[in-house]
Image (cartoon, rainbow, N blue to C red; front, side):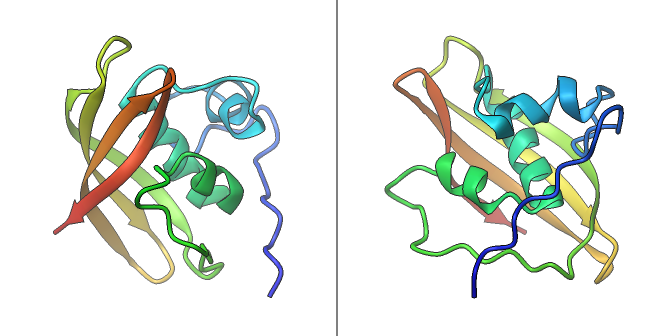
Length: 134
């Protein structure tokens, strides 16, 4: 089945990551490839937004090659509605690794995902390595 093209919000729509910025000023440039995440938290937020807008290509591009799945099919039925960043460790502009704990809520089906994600910075780019859910 061919991948459904992402449907990014149009300005001035609020960014799905709930940073308080518009999509065009926040995660949009990262998804478009015109900017890169400066921190592990920014990458995590942009990955959440990619799930929210259905951008599987961005998710694959920001996934570390050692743990990246061969295929990534997003469930179009899941409607992501809120992101709560609970804690961060490392992951700053000069760090090589970091973790971000978050809870991502979805409306259909109703529920949430709680994860502590690990990130690494290689070649000046932050990449998602893996996460522990619970």
